[in-house]
Length: 364
Image (tube, rainbow, N blue to C red; front, side):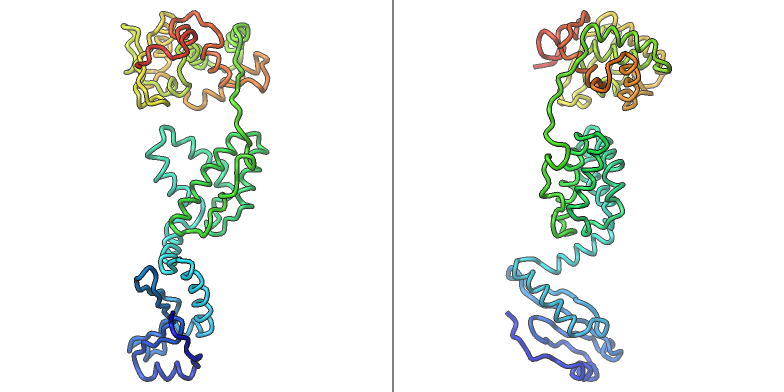
């Protein structure tokens, strides 16, 4: 440890500067440094010199006379306490500068995290982007990352749960935990403000739903889709194809025409388009082929089977469910679950899936 020296006076400091260039230690690694030109102007720098992990380090604390000798010593005491805990105060200062330049706000932190970890790895990164945009940024967006406290995290979660979306609250907690963990690793923040939160603090444990539509309810839905104002034939076709093909919603809504061979009656679902990353060849029954030919008319030559639906489909089916009298406990997931085998379907692939517990023609 550096030898403790007697306190210096302002008169001594001015005498050093009057003599020319200065590089003098004043105790505990604090060093007063000035070039000849700086000394002539009455200016200098306070520098902390220390060793960490066997290496010499330097940190510029500030400029003299803007930073007084008293304040410089106070800064040294704070930095020395961190150095004793193994913290590299120079690296921390550089990280702080990087933070101010690259991620001055939580919104920008989210963008950096999203670009590095979500965009290149997630099949549907827009799902994460939507949680950031709609739920996290309205509360935390303009806040500087070091200023975020657990109370801010709780505010985000409480707001989402109050809006009736507990599952989204769980997702938001996961995203915030990972986002601030990245900030902590980069020394942009001292501690992850979401670290002590659990699912019980967000939306609670997620319970798998077992609600599906019975055959009678499907018949009600068929009538409701035809009689609901502005429902649209495209939505209706999408529902029947979803039930008949036993695929996930976005596997169907993101499907391209070049994956279908209607003459051979085969849909080749490429592995990059499936949630499980497994290729599937799905045989098409005659009613399915007829529905697809009708859907091709509505696609107006575009490469996608349902170019106008995407995520709007889930929202679009709600009026038909309400019109059929199912109430709030039914949703798009209830319809999709009806194709998993709970309700026998006369179409080939769905019946095969119902009897075998696997989707049609999946390679083993």
